[in-house]
Image (cartoon, rainbow over all chains, first blue to last red):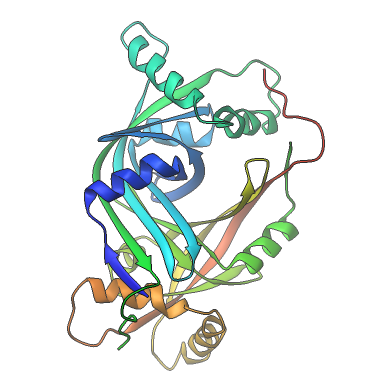
Length: 156
Length: 156
């Protein structure tokens, strides 16, 4: 197995291809992780949720972390971690265009609405739930890839 | 597709079975996520790393989040999130017994040492790296399961 850092370009390709990962947010030193679907575009990604704990936390603290990985085997995987800043895309005139864009891109992802709505359903709310669209502006990114060919990992 | 909250017992079974997931830590409001191998036992789990960013962060702030999921298909998955507290198991007389136990359990997991050592290797350190064993005491846990049978998800 050979493990290498992957260049930014490959991190970007991985995020674009996977479109599924985990989002980490934090409140008062407590981190929280949720699985998310997303659409990646250079330097940012779009996601969707119904109002709940993670939205509340990200409104309070916009620093987030996105992790996405693809594990094909113990010696064949790729993992990307991105740090970024949450920005909500509210249903206002100012954000109308970017919100429409996010919605249109996310709709192409099958089932994108399910994880979001299901959470809301489980919270047992009877009133209609407003969708929350958001953008994560990526500020830092790094990735690792393991491949079965090549020299074995050196263990001290 | 039917999505249900799973009881604690099933969350525990899932963590025990998977032994792989993501750990979230936070420093100064910035969350960070890394993939980890772990061994789950009731109310806590054991993990391993070489000294690096995540260890430094968890020493500074012991509040962590563990997420583990198994995605068999878009309508067939399970996801568990646990909040807990990081405790390092240093190489001292006081911790000797628990450290040995953690090491012994983790050694049964194939490749457990690889992700940890590889990280260290990539940091380009030439001196031997000391392993860091840790325990996460789980304080809260929740999980969701989607299964293909049953009624479709209601979308408002």
